[in-house]
Length: 208
Image (cartoon, rainbow, N blue to C red; front, side, top):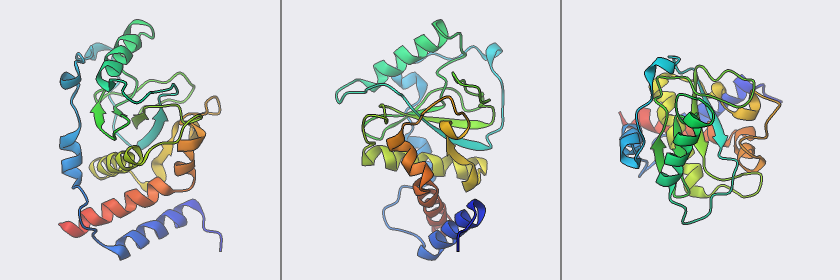
């Protein structure tokens, strides 16, 4: 039987619940506490007058779209991205709310209370935007990055009550981009992230 998207995701959640709690999984509050804050990487506060406030209803995955070589300083990258976003694009801040580096470390970027920005036609209002460094048209995401995406998506889904159906990627909302790159998009298309997020949410519930 060919399940539709809603039924398929419901089946994933049921499977996750049947598996129960796994040992060693970091709690979702711990995931949030471990996020590197803007001040720690040398960023500066945004100008709130330019902000569009929103309520999170979606979680949307992006990639950097450029090579990110091992040894590159992610904090220096974030400072450059913040400067470029403001000076060149005229945006409020970095367009994404979170950035994940090669080691799977999660950095805070734009304030989650403010809608992000995009170079394409979709309106990111309501979307929690996650960027993973690298160009995934050319390279594969490493396991640390994949694990960090799952942890962050699960934390956001639990905190903002986002459904599994609303975990998607940039290219799901625009036909003018390949973002987040074919090698990362595969994990969205094949429900890898939704499955893993469902499992993390079930683990969190079982641990209470």
